[in-house]
Image 1 (cartoon, rainbow, N blue to C red):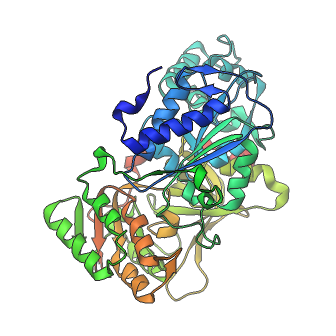
Image 2 (image 1 turned 180 degrees about the vertical axis):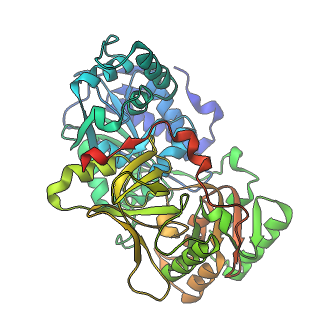
Image 3 (image 1 turned 135 degrees about the vertical axis):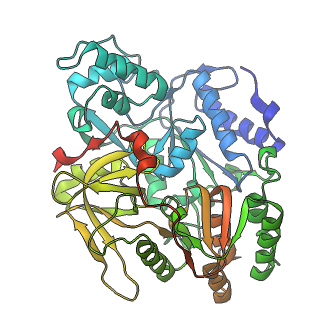
Amino acid sequence: MQHPALIFSDDQAEAWDRVADQLRGMGVDIVEGTLTPAAEGKSTVLGVMGKAGSGKTMLLASLYKALQGAGVEIVSGDYEGKKRKDRRTLAILAPTNKAASVLRMRGVPATTIHRILYTPVYDPQYERIADWLTGNGTRPEVEGLTEQALDRAKAFYDGNASVPGALAAAGLRGSDFIQGWKRREEPLDIGFIDESSMLDDRQFDDLREIFPTLVLFGDPAQLAPVNQSGQMVFDKLGRERQLHLSRIHRQAEGNPILDLAHALADPDLTFDQFERMVEQAARSDDRVVMAERVDATLMARSPVLVWRNATRIRLIHAFRSAYGAPEDALLPGEPLICDGIELPLKHRKKRIDLEARGLIKGAQVIYLGPGTRPGFARLHVIGAEEPQLSAASIIKIEKPDEEEPFIPQAATMGATFLHGAAVTIHKAQGSQWPEVQVFAPDLWAAAQAGRSEAGIPLWKRLAYVAITRAEKRLHWVIRNRLARPQVPLGIEDLRAHSGAVLSLQSQD
């Protein structure tokens, strides 16, 4: 197998070699393309750290392809066939649906940490179809499914490699073939974890229990998880376990958004100086915009990023007013953010089901309309592999200067949601959008407060995270104003996914 360093910078090539050495020590040789059974009791963890544009994703993708070429089996969380003692496996994970979808768009079969911690339990009849699709069985005959339906399932799987998606293409609902979910009891093998700066200690401990070999990819300049005292899991590894990518890769050179993000590393840079840099960038490149006011149309699909909760609530209220949304109901197309699951302990299986389908804390969701049962809502989970579902929902919308939110829809129990037209920069970590609006008055307030995190001014960390959420265009909003929307709110842009709706109603 050829070494892939020809396309790498020097520090990427060095990191590739270090990871390859660690994998070789665990029985997987990606240079020679050979595998040996995993040794009992051995474990290793490496951290690959670098700022935006340093090539972390390129490195991760190259390592994935090398492992796949060596015969390592990719575990997606959709379905796992019969285990073999000699098999070696790789799971590529991210903390959020959106972060996982960013990798999938680049050809890397990523899923969420929740989806790998919990495994689906398939109906035995449909398990035979899953075995056939994944190459571990012959084409089955299944009562109630025509040959044409099986052909549709196979065609879908060949293009998307998703077992639930393939079965949905055959005309089945999730509740037909998935009987429930269970906590993973047996360990896996190799785990690549993207956006690892978002991991808290509990998640890290869970991952170490499951994966003897862990490689963490993350950005040390981002914000540490809440209640972690400014520390990231990388800090536990020690210097010998940390690999640093410092060079900005050539694909990222000349990108004004990344230039602004990296300028924040200057310890002498003030907020006013930085804002002048944004202004200069906007004059020379249309990928940076100095915006006089917030664009309501953009808020429908990519939230305004703010620091303060009070700002978030005011902008949400202004967004709903601009679209003429009633106080007692949601409009189809309104964005939501999952705020967790409200279920008693006796309903643990239902909680697992909701989380495994993408309704995890922080997930970005679009409201499609009411479900067919009271308290249920039809939802589109941004970045999820099967994004559309119907679930028992408790939707809360906070109002300025009022302690209690109003609740336009509430099931007795289920997934809880806040409005998502604006979110805090902390909650935006792990996500990216084509265009991002950053509410600069909040960052100015953070600069005036004089707060620091891990020795770095808080406004600089906030600005870095907010800016690097933008894939193509950054809008630096300088005034507390909202521009009226240019088009009505709707869900037409989500129609392409409407053929594979998974229903959770039978779980209630």
